[in-house]
Image 1 (cartoon, helix red, strand yellow):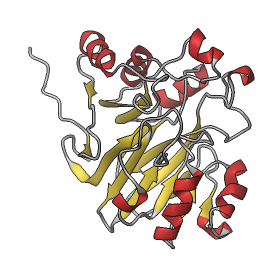
Image 2 (spheres, one colour):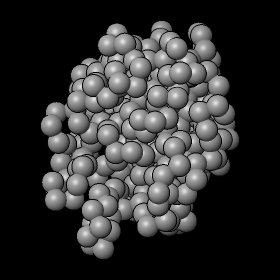
Image 3 (tube, one colour):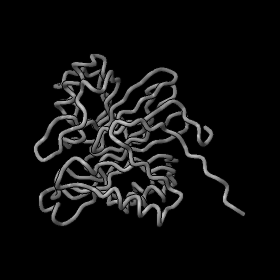
Image 4 (tube, rainbow, N blue to C red):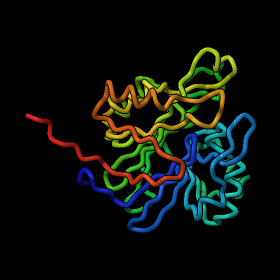
Length: 271
């Protein structure tokens, strides 16, 4: 895949960590990642409802927190899309079946194994570093409990981390993963939020450093807009990237605006 070339795939940001990914070649495939569409106490009203999204083929869920595994919305999505399939951690299988899915419509991705969703799209699940509650401590949980997804579109690789902080093992995995576009949380973590059992994520600066150090060309910040007591500073991402990683593009997506997935071309360095 040449830099600057779009292979027929786009992202639409739905808010928080939710994205609609649309692949047009060789056939149309529409995938939701961590959709959070249910009005929730303490959260701003979602921008979109199930009915706004059109036909959906797959849902990818990274873990069981409500803003990543929105069970009520998943139930409605299944009613609107009878052939819908879901990829999610193994321990969520019972809840997925309760949402109306047949066992054959649920796929548990084995860590580090590629799964082909079409002839041009394959997905690999890798561990993230998170926790259900602060008291549990940040780690990868039981194997496959907290996931990130690497999506390969004919050679372009997009990484959606789910919720995560950094660890040596995650960093070492991503350094050799060939990531071009990184979708990373930026809401951070601190003593006061953790006292309220709000499990945190990468800070704005950590997200930029991670994207830059793994060789990503584009950083798309996420997980900064849903809860009034757990927001992130998008301006800090842009400022830090401009100062310390000036060749890293930061794409701040507008709600519902199409962003074609591509590898940016880079001018040759001046002699």
